[in-house]
Length: 235
Ligand code: ATP
Image (cartoon, rainbow, N blue to C red):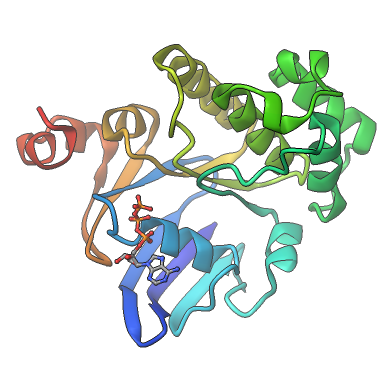
């Protein structure tokens, strides 16, 4: 479904991602793991069109998307929920959801129906639809960010560090949310600092190191790999 081949991305003259290739099949949860600065966020930004690749290709459903503008990538069904949530503190929950729906992938559900679906997934957002995002807890803000992405009707949802700053109990809720999104038919590409969490949720994983893919494995294999445990799980 999503295919990245020999992706190169630079910041100025400095190349941060070197020849990264990966694929995400329909219905999978795939995770990118690796230490800070490994190039995970940069890879997601290049897929979603927020950064221009200097080399390589990104295709989605057989179509090249690496020269499209970010809103065109969203319209194809690839939606990026960025690290740090990037909410507008003065805007309400509902206003964020309206924004998310502005440039979505056309689908069978209208705005009202989609909103109901999102509120069913996150009942607290229905209760707090008129609350300003800036006054909500970290966990609730993460729900707003994911819900905003869902309003665009994604086929493939890319989540960047969704557990960042969440209390442990909220991390469990987040894991359940990702599972139910996946069960509803959404394909997931997950970047996550909590490697144990990522590997428990994912089917397959790519390990990135200094801008390169150094390993691709079934997630359960990596979870059982002592090298990964030492290098990334701190076990
Ligand atoms: P993190 O978990 O810390 O976000 P990451 O694996 O997502 O790590 P990236 O953020 O993609 O890594 O960073 C890859 C490399 O690109 C790093 O060396 C980083 O310093 C560099 N980099 C990231 N953003 C920029 C930027 N805006 N300008 C210049 N260099 C950047």
